[in-house]
Length: 294
Image (cartoon, rainbow, N blue to C red; front, side):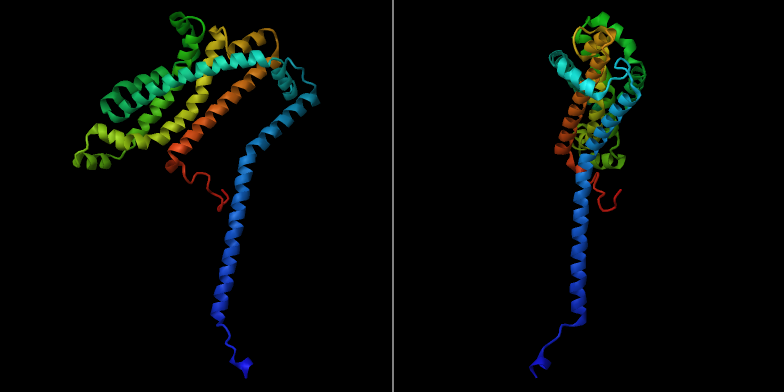
């Protein structure tokens, strides 16, 4: 009689519990897959980089390519270790030169970008001139800059500024210009002045554009410094590379390329970190495709 008095759970309740357990296990599997994918994405660039070095080393050793044509990565590494002191001194000079030119490019680029994006008259007056100026090869301007500013650091700073200035100004102007006309009309109807509209709406809207241009401009800025140093420099990585190439010390030239790449990647990472810290609202969700696997 006691056995018959036992109350059995309804079948629907058991089915619901079973489905809930299955859902929980499915969610746990998705989370684990997302974590694995995130770890893979973190190490994937390093795996590709190491793979390229191994392939490079193997091709050079297999085909017996001489060092004055294409040195192996191990030879380039040994050269960096051997000439570490002069490489470090010249790299420091190039880095400071690039930072100074890049700082001026940021100040003027932001200012001019705000003016171009917020004023129709400034846009039609200056934007065509910017396009025409940017189309001039900067290597053709270096001899003129040498005449104006002399040989050495000043010419490199100005060249770095000229190359990195244009993308910042254009992207900031594009970001401010994307503010919808309807939103502008509403804000004006509420009594907002044009300066306040730009400050409260235009500048925040242009920040994703600005940081996108920032990551492009920092690498271009190094290009400008090294370009000027190779033509009319007395110090810097560009000067070191041109002297090494004149002596057919190709491994030292590749060492200069490696050091320049390291500095560029480091500055790119700093810009990306600042972007993440300041405008995470604009980049949130990028790369979050772990469920779809895209």
